[in-house]
Image: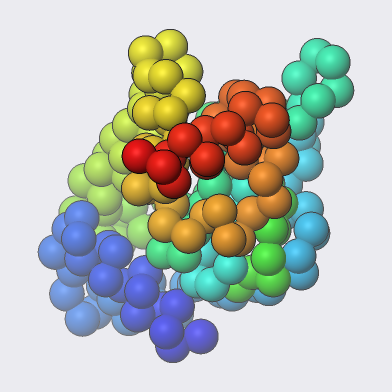
Length: 195
């Protein structure tokens, strides 16, 4: 667990200054969990009461559309957070499911833990604001990509944002994330290789 704890410590330090006493409080609060490949962490329609910090492995955030088809919203690699932020903050049913794509180890942050961190850390509110801003940018980038960027631009951006994702995730999930068909993905990969 020490590696995961040190990773989240580094991430927090990227956002705010934290002293040893504050860090000791954080460290004592964090719990870890492991999920097997294909295990569901959050089911669409259930309340998402946890933020998951990915220590190792890979998660996907997805939803079922009105036709019952899965649509991938986001992938969460090591050293990133996964949650349905709206469900987490408002205590409402989740719009998304979260599933392990590989055997995955996470650090769990509950709503109560987060509130305690906000109260105990000198810059806890700033930490929350900066993480919320990052979450906003993820959503904003996803929306812009769908409306502004070509499929090839989305493909290149995905490869930049998620290194080696093509080796870790089945192609039909990649196609779903890019909002294209698997056949179109094959064409993109071929065209990109020949650029």
